[in-house]
Length: 226
Image (cartoon, rainbow, N blue to C red; front, side, top):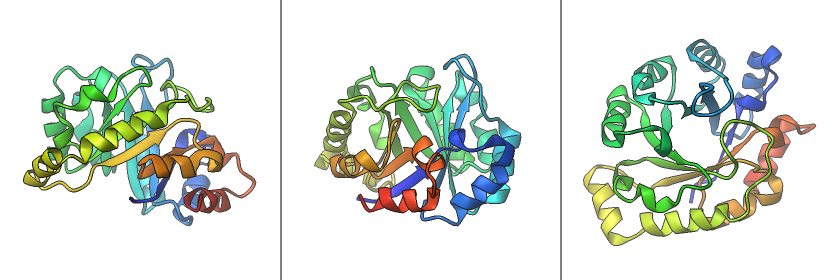
């Protein structure tokens, strides 16, 4: 399994976004997580294309872009153009997932799908072979600072089993894809990072745990070594 920390810029100091981005750029975190909210799919509004472009200029890290928006297929090409290396859309927000994933792939970005806490991982079965990543939400999407929902790691374990069957591996290999990347987002800190990795996660999104720490870079190292 990989061990990737993806600090969420939603918890950064917006008045010092360049400073905080460069701090992450110099840290052991491999990814930078960008939460895009539209005030419709979730009751909050966050970053758009100009902010993503500014973050792209301030870091060489992999940009992990999570679209919490309705009709994301209208915007995936623009997010890729703005610097997204991975574009994750929500199962609950897309009516034609196959078409949306094709648009993401055509844009040059990696494909990801996220599911809310109440959504079972079984809904992913029909298109799991087409995904680079699945993001398990361990809080309700839309706000930072929430507590980790118990039982989320059971979903991670179930998903890892689904992705590890000989049939699924063969189907993914036929599409030129390797092992599924599993990411988790919500209430992640050094206290539960080790359990998340052990359950089958490759990437952990952490917001307040990183940016609220006295030494964010040291906190990232602590999570990686949990």
